[in-house]
Image (tube, rainbow, N blue to C red; front, side):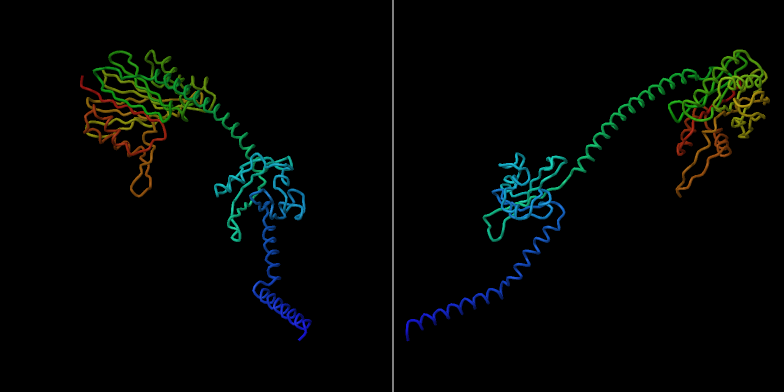
Length: 421
């Protein structure tokens, strides 16, 4: 066999072997599938809205998505193989705030929370996430994720400005609130200064009282006027509203009482004078309910006038209740209002209770969660039941009895017991 034939046969054998090898590799790793996988990977990469690139530890870009090429205004071939700092910043060396190396060394994600946008306007954040290719375990790459946070930074800036403005406003508000508190404390001291600190010391009466404003100042007023050893006047009033406005009306009423009550005059005349003073000096629509009465110990009588005020009660020693009432509307609204007086006798041991409506216009919670109004009648019954309680303990008994109620209005209670002397 000639050498040419032998060479030809060997050549055909190698060709057949190569073809068989190619067929084997194609069956295991079809080229069209490899091609498709690369296209699919790039499509998934491009589907991400934020700019992404894969960078080697030498800052060379290995892969980029469409958002990144749009950001740097370059094509894919112009991007791959270039240095990331050249593409993003036009630099010849890594960026000063770059954390790629730190991310690789630490093996953890690092983030630049904010840096200038490559366009020169706006702000971006950059996250570096290291990973190793399974084909090259000694080679580490980094996925660089860029987010445009310009809108967030603008919102943050606007929020900081508003927060500073709010802090400034809050500072002034706190100062104003402190000034209001100081003014209220001053008003409270003034109001307490015009209210009696103690009941008059007289052998004819035992007097106890309690005053409870729901705010720093209240609209309830009361007073005791001793004309002589045989005559003592008792006044109680309730201005409409709450707070400073009610306290203002109450203060004017107290000054009017002091001015016109220096000398004993008919009880209805005194109430008429207070009515005219309020009409002449208060033009806000506020009004006052009041009750004014004078004890005459020589005659053992109590003469009184009521102007729209809750009816005081006289509780006899046997527990019988007598409501003290006369016709007459509240004062401070109608000029020339006519008021009437009435007189009741009393005996040693009788008790008189004068109060404002805030003490009985309250809800009492029960176990079912519902609320029931205390009301005037039930409160009068409580007063009558106190006859068995020593007078020195009447007020503490009231506080204990009414402890379950929640009060939303000022209230005043004056308890009086007549003696035999």
